[in-house]
Length: 194
Image (cartoon, rainbow, N blue to C red; front, side):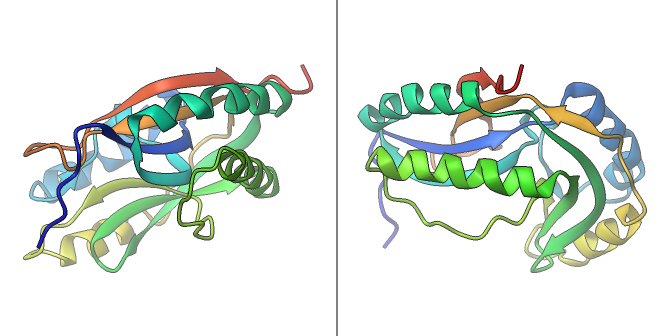
């Protein structure tokens, strides 16, 4: 039996997002794949992000508790220099681009974000960080498209860019038919060291 999601919940995660020009650089690289694999469910470019902590379904009143400590963390944290590189897949179902650059700084920021979430009393599955940007999902009857697209993306090396904003994001998963859409609940500049 499928669990009903109460209307008073929000699906939430905390993330970094590449700047528009870095996303456009990757989108240009993906143009042949968009045409070759039209049946894959491609994420919208404006929704591309690097998840630091996936919190899942939260009661709506819990979300405002995250704002002050995340704002404080962002103000004390330095931007992290990253780049998008190559491609891969999870279980022949999810196509992703890899992330390289200051991975030590990324892991440090992730640990701090997760500490803040725990201190707010919010329980979540604390999975190991595997830095990536999800690009598309295969349809159940066509898993080979993801594997082929990942291979075609393997040589991609994007330019370096500073991740300068921390995003608290909500999504509409489980809210009926249609594509997944994300929206910033709030975002803060990473200002530490400025």
